[in-house]
Image (cartoon, chains in turn yellow, cyan):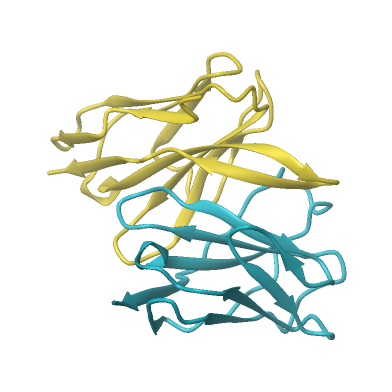
Length: 115
Length: 113
């Protein structure tokens, strides 16, 4: 099991450029998430997908779009990158631990710099 | 989701126990207490969770106060690999929003040889 994989690991963009961050999980999880982490801060939820075919906004969705391509893959797109989007981006998926409690599994992150 | 308060940082020596506190005075009766940790340059990883009773697993123990307004994550013998940021998170599984976790700044644990 590779778990949650993310590509690329690092990316530098110029303001106004677009790009897509890719995420895939091989654990057959229904739910997937995108977070961003700014220096010295905790993670903030951008978007999540409860199941294939559904997506919902999190705390900080502005400037981003997502696609749940299939059960395995959940991509995050920046249409017009801004310096404020410089951050580390984490993808996660979740499985039930007990009852209604879920454990989230995180990928290694994508470090994005927008100049 | 209710708010948690954790110290910004703590230090420990290797092979000593570590007690990481978390205050959550506004916890509701259905909030679960989750702990995640984030090793340097990695994504967070699940550590443990509990509702009312103390919990043990291979990584740590979770001690929950009787009034549930605070909890403590216990690492029984700290190793250098335990140096990480530890997040205490409350989550009501019945509150909707599908398993969203709200991360605070956490406690940065330094472990000295």
